[in-house]
Amino acid sequence: MNATPTKDKIIEELRRVKTPDGQGDIVRQGLVSEIVIQDGKVYFALAVPPERASEFEPLRKTAERAAAMVPGVKAVMVTLTAEKASVKATSGQAAPPPPAQRPSHGATLQGIADVRRIIAVASGKGGVGKSTTAVNLALGLKANGLRVGLLDADIYGPSMPRLMGLSGKPEMIDANTLKPMENFGVKVMSIGFLVSEETPMIWRGPMVQSALTQMMRDVAWGPLDIMVVDMPPGTGDAQLTMAQQVPLAGAVIVSTPQDLALIDARKGLNMFRRVNVPVLGIVENMSYFLCPHCGGRSDIFSHGGAEQEAKRLDVPFLGGVPLDMTIRETSDEGRPIVASAPDSDHARIYRDIAANVWGQVGETSPQRAAPRIVIE
Image (cartoon, rainbow, N blue to C red; front, top):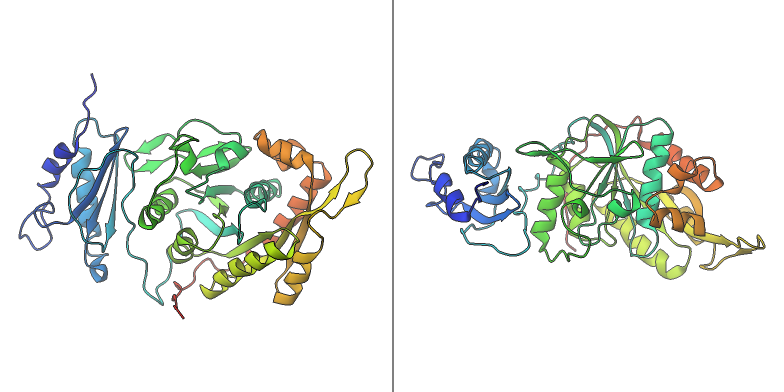
């Protein structure tokens, strides 16, 4: 019978890990916080001075190895945080620990191993078809001959498992690294693979940041030419985490044509500009509707608003995608239109958008300075 790891057993092993000053162990010195155990996976954080984060990296690795010694432990994930630590029991839904400190202003952002470019697909509000756009953009990039990964950064409403027709859980390559899921030649990672579809993600901001960091850093992504990140709607923790943790080559903004959607799209666009992420352009989703019976065209959500907004804001207009039942049906069935009907007009639209995006980021340097967040 397999042993079951417990919090007490983890703490017992961590008491063997000495602090860098040799004045005691990391438990007695109060460095350990938020020990969480689920399905043999152990999560916790080490509270360290932010200016000494790099100095404490060997301690983090030592703590991971110590926790991995407990019988029944399948994987250990430890992060560094500047939050005050206190060992306490955690029950119920697992919550990863807070992430390591963000780099200071002027520091060069560290990319993801073997990933050349990272782009974000975002929207100012939900319900505009952002995730469907992200999936078909990724498949369009794949169809254009690139090696592509797709990261679902929407922790509260992950949709990639359903949209990409994937189920099951990722394999562990080693104690600290996950193997991404794959379909249609695209590598995929989502929190939706790790929790059931009906489970609500009742997580605080630091937990969201940590989950994103782990899905970026603790997954064997490469080699990839480009990673497409499906962002949650709005301008919150996930957007700032991506902007401040990895060198985003650019962002694609998705909007529907009507004024209310464009107001929110402007907010998303301005957020990326504020943190020095290039805006690659705007996609107008649900641009128009063609009746499948009579062929008549109806501008249900108005038409051309996103294109006009792109001109006003001096950013590229990447294209308009129609409101079409085939796109909706193939998305619901986990057979995205670019993969299931590659010769269709709709697939061509997404491939053209993908070619435009790659034309902007393909030759740019992936390195940039970490943004300075200014609160006005």
